[in-house]
Image (cartoon, rainbow, N blue to C red):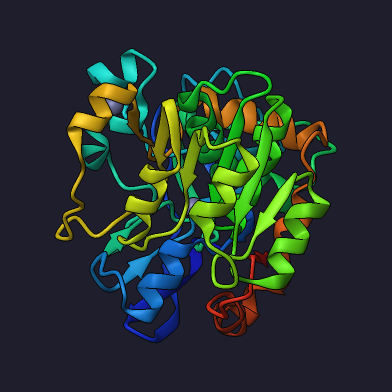
Length: 346
Ligand SMILES: [Zn+2]
Ligand SMILES: [Zn+2]
């Protein structure tokens, strides 16, 4: 048993099971045995070839597992602990030292979690990984590992929500009700906001209403801008989160901001497409544009608490579950446009 089976994306549209060397732990590392791994858009886009991380690719950054062994110097974990891993924060750079590990300068310099000739993000699609202890969070023994495997997407949304600095009673608009939009909705309601969502899919709009959205707009059937004006007495929205990667949405998003409005750039965007912005208006209306990407360590910790204590029910965003051996079927389901998260279980 000194091998670690892994499901890799060998090339665009090509998945393959490979046997890697089971990693040897070094001091301050934990041997992590994967139990549950979710297929994020990174894996989906790499599989489809719409994003190139470099092939072959070992993915799986939304994962939960069990501590199999601990290295010298590890004091926070014991064999058998249930854990989730976070981003590969180096814990040695100026951003990590100041609680802003989303901008870690050195994560690419760290030793790989497993010896793999190719590009890698997370690595939860391998049975075993060697992970520095500071990149792990212990979860309660009774935590549902499929649910806590979804720590990272929730933590990304917590980062975004906290940067928006929502005040009780403010009007928040969320564009897009995929998993990220839905998690933003749940968190914004917890902040005491009135939430208006914009989504073209009927089922997702209904799901938003079931999850506390105050109003759900279908931007294909009605004018998004007119509707926001109508619902806000012509003032506009205090906070707008854009969760969809369509460049033309930005102008609409800016046009519905109220004075002092904050626009949160949550979705990744094609940097080569420029969006014209009237900075006279930004000045006069005191708008704020805020970028957000990935979570900090603290956001991850808070996400595990919300999930493990069942404050947020992650079952809502799980589409389906597949055994590790059914990984190819799992990818096929994950790339369907209506799928929320697909979980692979070991
Ligand atoms: Zn993710
Ligand atoms: Zn760092």
